[in-house]
Amino acid sequence: MTAATPGTSPHRTGRPPAACPVVTEFDLRVKAAPDRPAVVLPRETVDYGELAARADSVARALLGARGEGAEPVPLMVLDPAWMLAACLGVLKAGKYYVPLNPHHPAARNRELLHRLGAAVVVTDAAGPERPLGDAAVILVEDLEVRPGAPGPAVDPDSWAYALYTSGSTGQPKGILQNRADMRQNIERHAALGIGPHDRVTLINADGFVAAVSNPYMALLNGAALVPHSFQGDGVHDLIDRLETSGTTVYYSFPSFLRQAAAVAEGRATDRVRLAYLGGESVHRSDVLAARRLFPAATVAVGLNSTETGLTRLRLFPPDAEVPDPVPVGGPVPGVDIRVETAPGRPAAVGQVGRIVVRSPYLHPAQWTDRGPQPLTEAVPGTDAGTGARPAPREFRTGDRGRLDASGQLVHLGRADGMVKVRGYRVETVEVEAAVSAVTGVGEAAVVPYEAGDHATELAAYVVAKDPALTDAALRRALAETLPPHLVPASVLLVPRLPRTRNGKVDRKALPHPSSGASAGPAVPAQVTDPAPGGAPDGLRAQVLGQVAEIWSEVLDTGPVLPGDDFFSLGGTSISALRVVSRIRKDFGVSLKLAVIFETPSLESVAESVLRGLERT
Image (cartoon, rainbow, N blue to C red):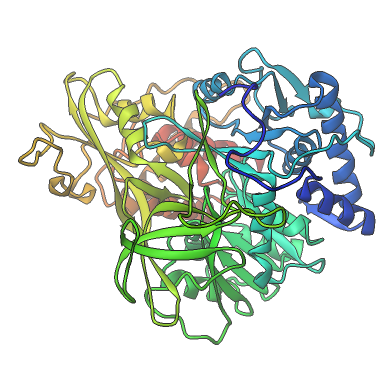
C-alpha cells in the first residue's frame, strides 16, 4: 500500500461528506475551555489551547509540504504531548497517521516505512537520530506553534489511522480504521462517565500513544491525560505518579497492573475512582489486585480488539462480588455479539464457540500491496443502510467464548495463534519466521506459555544446524530485527521437533520451558577498562558481584558469569520484576524494568546500576 491508496473505507454507502467528527468535537472542547489541562506531564502541563495550537502547526506543515488529499503519515514522536498533537494535526490535514515506535529496531521501522510509501514523516528531536528511508521529515521542534489551520473538508468515512500489529503471515499487519467508526467507538465507553473532572492515565509504549481509544475518550470529554511510559517509567513509581498527578481514572492492560501490584508493598491511592482493564484476558486476581491498589475504585473490564474497538463492558463497584471466570460484560452501544459453533450456527447458552462481532460501525481494512482489503463482511439479508446509519457488517474474531443466561459474555482465549504478551498483540507465526531466518537455525517452533501470575511469554524450540549456536546468540540476533515483546523469553535448543502422524509439529509434545532453558556454554563478556571519570574497578567488581548474587537467588541457579543472558538462565518478565525490585532496594537506584529486556546480560545490567549510583 502506498500514498496512492484510496482514502476512504470500502463498502460504505449512503453517507454524505461531512466534517471529521473527532476533529470537530475536539475543537468544541478547545473553544469551551482553552485553559483546561489536556496533558499532565511531570515537568509541564499542556492545556487544550496549547495542544490545539500544536496540532494546527502540524496540520499547516503537512498541507504546506504535501497539499490536500488522504495519505499515510508515519509518526515517530517520543514526547507524549507532541505525539497527541501530531495525531490531531494529521487528522486536521485530512490525512491518516501511522504510529511507529522509535525504540523498535531500525530495520523493522525502515521496512514499515518502505511498505507505506510515505512521502513525509513527523518526528521530534528525541526520536530517531536520522531519517529512515527517503521521506521528508517534519521536526515538531521547528514548527511555529500558533492556532489556525486551513482544515480541508474530510469525509467521515476517510481513514483516521493505521496501526501495525503482529501478523499471521510472518510479517507485521497494518489495520486501518476510519473516522466515523473511531468516533463511535468513543460512544461505547459512555458508561465509564469520563468528564472534565477526570484525569486519565495514558499507559503505553513510547511513540505509540494515540492509536487506541483512551486518548480520545479523555480529550473529547474534556478530561486530562496523564502519560506514563511502561518502557521509560516502569511500574515501581506508578502509585506516586498517580497521587502527584491527581489521576482519577486508571487504564492499562492487566499484565501491567499485575507488575504494579507485585511491587506496591502496600501502597495504594484513594484518588482513583475507576480502574479500567482491557486488551488482555482479565482474571479474578486482576480485579482483586486493582482493588488493593485503588480501594475506592469501580473496576471496569472490557473486551476489545484492533479491528473492532470495544465490544463488551462490565463494571464491578468496590463492594460487588467478582465471579471466576470474570465476564467481560454486556452489550455496548452500536455493537452486537454472537457466539457460533460454526459459521451461521449460534451456540446455545453456556456453549463455547467463536465470537462474532456485528455493527454498522465496523469497517476495518488490512493494509496490503493490492490496497485496503476489508476485514468484515456484509450481514446477509440486510439493506445497504441509510445516510444516518450504515448497513451492519460482521467480523469473525479469533476469540472463543460463551454467553450465560443473563447475556454476559465470558472470554475463553484465542482459537488461533494470536496471544497477548505484555499487552502487545503477537502472532506466533511472525516470531517463528524470524527465528527460522537466523543463521544457524535448522527448524524452529514458537509457542506461548504461562510463566507465572498469569503472565504470558513466548518459548522458542530450536533445532540448530550450527553446533556453535547458543540461545543467547539467537536472542541477540532476534533483538536486531524484532521489538522486545516479540523476542522469546525462553529458548530451548532441542535435537528434533516432535511430529504428529501427518508430519506437523506436535506443539503439545514440546517440553515446558520450566524443564530447563538450554543456555549453552556461558561465555564471559570482555570487561573493558572504565572510561575516564567512570566507576573504579573495585566498585565495578563489587556491583557486578552483588547483581550476580541477586540473579542467582531469584532464578535459583548457580554462579552467574558477566556474559550470561538473563533469559537464557530461565528468566521471565515476573522474575525480571523481582530482580529490579531487589536492585532498587539494595542499591537505592531507580533502575527500570526495560533495562533487563533491552540489555539482558549480567554485565550490562550491572553497568546500568553503576550509572544509577553515579547520579545519586
